[in-house]
Amino acid sequence: MTGGEVLDVGRDAIWLTIQLCAPVLLVGLVVGVVIGLFQALTQIQEATLIYAPKIIAIFATLLLVLPFMGSLLSTFMREIAARIAGM
Image (cartoon, rainbow, N blue to C red):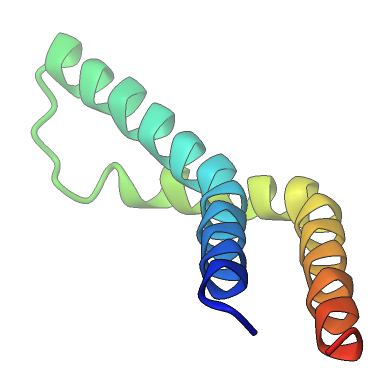
């Protein structure tokens, strides 16, 4: 493999990682902000209040997004296998 091909694979792997992590991270961020606003508005200072809703939201997101994640990983693996076979 040439240096350009290695950089292409690395760039694709980084982009795949971003695509895989983005939905879960965004849901965690939104739930955290909403609960933080709720705590600020109601003046509830319970530090552990955020964990249960965030865990449930992230779990539900993973259940919904898992087929998409599998599809992305499968496509990436096929591309890598095709590059290996083409050598």
